[in-house]
Image (tube, rainbow, N blue to C red; front, side, top):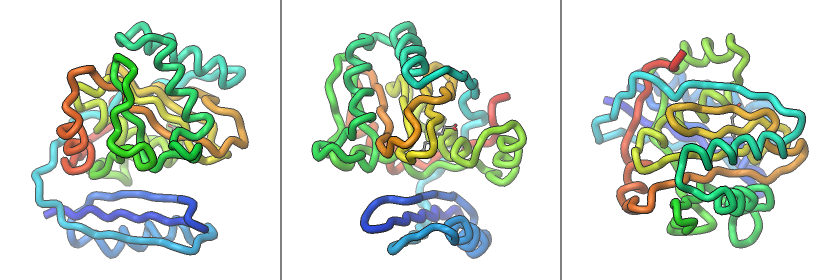
Length: 246
Ligand code: PML
């Protein structure tokens, strides 16, 4: 039997860190300890740990998306590289993709803050998330052997954030109607972002200016996507990934 452990931490209602692990029952105490350990040097005033038994059978994916990394002189160049890939590989007009992606740089929620989850945009350029403040959150995803995968990725020069984002993007793109994901971090110090598309996790350095505390994700989907089914897959179906695609 598997359990999901989620931790969310904030300061003055601003999200600081969050993580999810999917583990067997006997590992729960150690994992909770490790998650608390991660935030011991951070200033926070609220932290919530939720442990839930997973009732649904997980989907097992043999491999993650394949990682590629590209470096640029500035984020504008990286952004136009990403937009070109999107217009080559999808039916989404460059101007449409640009219009929505630009929102991430100024705060995509109606009050110009960051959304809590992702925006959903279809090929026609319609915004589909049910709540524009909240967006949709991909949860219930992990590597089967996270420690081994983390070690492997850190050895190759990637970061802890790559581990989480690669798992999340791999779950997202496993849903066939979800054709691309664009992401910039909302952490002002973390300028590496990515475009997940066509089996690849394309890291772009830098994809945002240093010091900008705006960020978020956009899931680009097919026009015939059933939005309730998409929410159900992203929020309710557990996905476990065996290995990275090398
Ligand atoms: C990377 O692979 O380095 C990019 C990770 C983006 C993480 C986004 C976030 O942590 O908010």
